[in-house]
Image (cartoon, rainbow, N blue to C red; front, side, top):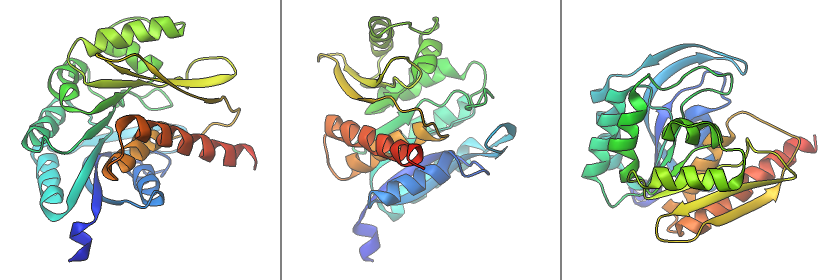
Length: 253
């Protein structure tokens, strides 16, 4: 089948019944860039655009089996990882990544919903840092998630964010993209950090418009461009522009 030879992004994450985030947003984003998707569902959630009312994690073995089946069925050229829910699911996903080290993985470090509901079990952050982050091509935290990952208060300026990022890199992460959406000022700046290189800044005007699922969108766009064999820096640049243009569309309505 010709379909099997086309590049796919394997989306590993949770459902969102509202369609505003999670795998629905991932599929929408990756498809709009012209790349196919396949799936491994980690959790079923019940949510509206305002609140998450229930979370039902999948069995870790089922998540791993879905991933292996997707990898067997398709030419998976990148993996996008979102909501993981439990430490056991993190371990299962990490096991499959170790079996497929040639496939770049993008980790959107989803720790809580926009409304504030925790999407990762207490104690699982340490497992994510130890078992999963070192296997991923890039980890994408916002300023609040970055602070939680290093056990600190959110950074109040760029220097503080870079210091926290360097601290997280020291635990084994290959690269970080620190999102600036929670910062203030007229520009929205994301910072790509790698241990052996100077920080690279990706800068757009800060728009008044907002929407749910922009974190899913950014990570998915980056994964889609990696699947098309672009470099990490180029994939981040194109992913940032993709999200900016979507927000521009909302702002103009």
